[in-house]
Image (tube, rainbow, N blue to C red; front, side, top):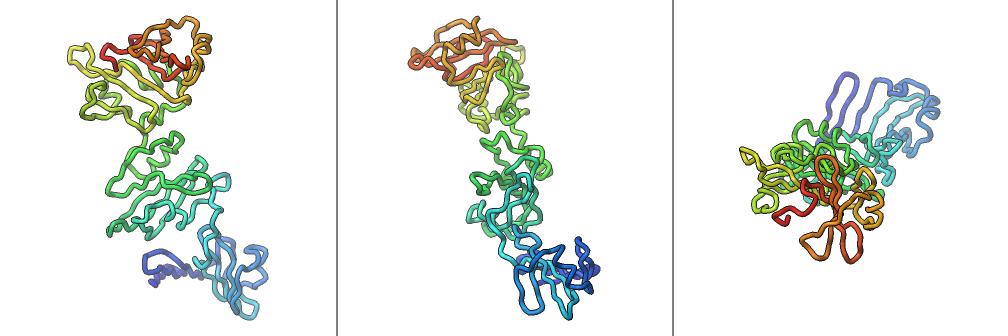
Length: 347
């Protein structure tokens, strides 16, 4: 145990550096101080949860296991210590309306067995329910380092979204379009950027011009800078780029444009999840007849594949192309392009 004396308080840390006790000579935040009558305790701290001779324990934070340890002699308070001397109460963390963060034990359970939490400096709930951000110190593969742990709650259990250490680990927050990106980015302080393109687009309408700031005709370099593409070898259909797969149902296709400098430009966008909607409400899974009612001016065109056909509608600077599965007569996926049909290269 290591003791640090500061002003009128004694801070005690265990062998791993975790703060476990604070003994104060000052009044608590509730105004209780050594020298007060024991009668002031009940109305403020309630009933003790443990009693051992002259010492009583009162709950301070049940989720973290903190308690007030109060020593009483001859009816007077002689000593007050804030200690981590209770077993953290499981199952009460919510980060919902009451903004109760997950405990250290809950955070540890969210991590791989190879990662040991040495110290938790802070855990904060975000503005979005069921998300929390922890600043902590960990031991991983024999190396101790600081880091930021982002967790979210699924079915009442906290699970790891990502763990960012000062060595990197900047993986996209896959399949989490509701992640509180601004708060996470602020927490990692420039170490990573989680403003991943597809996540910014989720919920915006699919139009013949594009989705949000992902537009037909924009350069692949611009699309890469906005988080929609990255360079990858062997991408014949994508002019050397690959779509960012944070949302696996969004694909961005650039090609070498007919420009003087032969820049790659985005000429096709594809969505394949029913969560995407056009401005009129068109979506994947909709019947061909419903699609025609929404777009009475749509033109039927053949596809490269006999198993499907196209319903094409001029919209904005390009076309909305509903790809219809012939066997079920429903929308299989939606394309946005500048031709109103499959590209000449078959992609």
